[in-house]
Image (cartoon, rainbow over all chains, first blue to last red; front, side, top):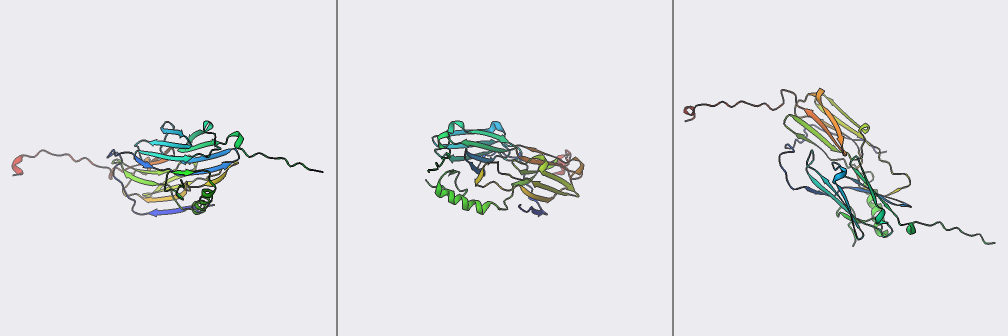
Length: 125
Length: 147
C-alpha cells in the first residue's frame, strides 16, 4: 500500500485565463501500463480529457498507433499519441478498445495457434 | 530497432526478451514512484478553476473540501490488476494524493461545485463579491482638462 502523499502550497501559481489564446495543439505521449496473460495483452493508456469520439486506432503492418484528440476546454488542446510494435503472435484483426473515465483499455488477443498448449506427459510402464 | 529504456520514445516493443528485462528494471524503478497527477489552478475572471487529471478515478474516490480559503482535494484510487493478467510494464502514475491549496482570492465557499468528465476533475470556485472583477465606469471628460 502506498502512502498518501501530501502537498501543501501556500502560494499556488495562478495561470492566465485558459481561453486567452488558441495555440497549436500540444503533442503529448500518454503513459501506458502493459499486462500479459495466456490469452494476450492488455494495454491501459491514460487519456484524461479525451472523449470516445476523439480516439482513433490504426494498425499499419506491425505498428499499432493510438491517437487521442483533446479539445481545448480546461486543459489546452492536445494530441496524445502512442505507438506499439505488435508481437507477431497478436491477432491484429481482433484488437478491441474501450474508453472509460479517460482510460483507454486495448485488448490484444493472441492468435489461437500462439497460445501456450498444455502437453500431457504419458506415463510409460 | 531498440527502443530506449523508458519513456523517451513513443514506440516500444511489447514482446522482446531483452527489453522485457529492461522493462522489469523500469517497473521496479517506477512502481513506487511518487509521481502525481498533473493539477492546476486558473483565474477565469468571475471564478477560479482547479483541475486535476485523474483518469480512471470514480467520483466516490475523490473528496473535495473547502474551509476558510483552503481547498483540499484528496484522491484515493486503488489501481488493481485485471484478474488473470500480470503487469509487465508500468508507467501510469499512482492516483493517491492530497493537494491543499490556499486560494489567492476570497471565494463564495457555499457556491463551489466539482465534477469529473473523461477523467478530468474540475472544481469551480466563484469569487466572493468583493474579490470579483469590478467594472469601473469611464466618464467622458472635456478635452480642456487634458491640455
